[in-house]
Length: 162
Image 1 (spheres, rainbow, N blue to C red):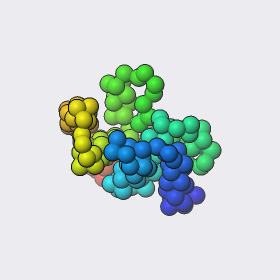
Image 2: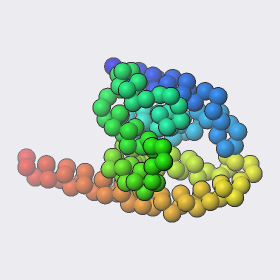
Image 3: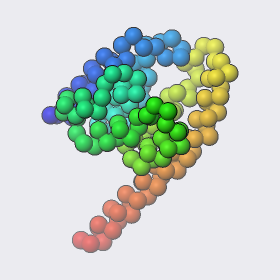
Image 4: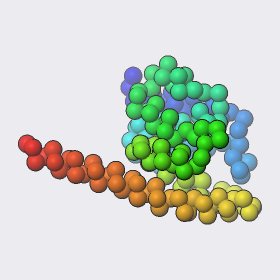
């Protein structure tokens, strides 16, 4: 399947998964995954970005996504970024940090969630969430930097072998 067709399918699935859901500002929830998707670079990242909350917040399953034809790389990243019920947050973050695509999507997700301009009257809970994200974001960015350094080193080593 062509990547753009997969992205269109992902958007349609996300719209269905988040139908009748609203964000903290009262806007249709689908706006959040679409903003996350639009902030990412590769087609795989965009697909994972638009679907990143779909399993956690709806009846959609990884098996549904597999049956819909999404590739293994997408399924792995979505599995990594999906928080399980009652899961310790640090265990969740460790799993996210083990998958480069999930990590890029999680950073984009947090950046969008940190945009307080979307909330007309932020509550104490909103400010606490912002503070929590401000503490976690540098750790995720450092983990991503490690992925990038490893990729650069591997590319350098491969060129040396030529």
